[in-house]
Image (cartoon, rainbow, N blue to C red; front, side, top):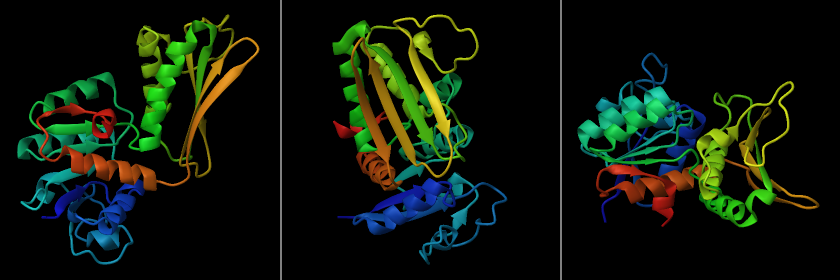
Length: 267
């Protein structure tokens, strides 16, 4: 069976370098291309050197178009919303499926991504961890079964360098919980300060913690009178994100155009 050619964008980033290692260590996968932003000192280097993993004999390009050689079967992108949209356009034009793990997308960004998904398969998820995606499903089921007698609050924690807040995973948890209770997205509250008044039963609070080297932690609190439940996921390394992204990449190859999520991959 032929090896699957994977292109990694942003190879010098935390996830980019971890993905390069993951591809190198996974049977049936081969690094087919690598990119970094224009002007990066990594451009022109071997991808292995750029990611500090040793020689891999794949040159880092400053555009995805240049990296989409005939060897490329799928692209994995953990960069930024703006870069991810450019990469989605390139993948749509080349008909190469794309896995997007970037976070911080606005509704306008998502609408643009949906346009590109009419031409190629795109798997998008704020968190590629299998455990987190099962947690999201469980969190929604718990919220529906417990009902409004239990108020819901979400707390997420990440390392000091994370640029967006709240995390995409926390927002996805809140959205799925709201949907499970038949509530609009407007019930999600991401900040409280000053005289905010009494809490609505329907409100879903999301709190953010930043500091240190925390990979990612999410806890959903179900707060009732006289009792509470807590549902938590704690990531101790980025390996589970890598495993999920590689699983999504293999799944996406050969799929018809459309915007997919990790729920589709795990199903």
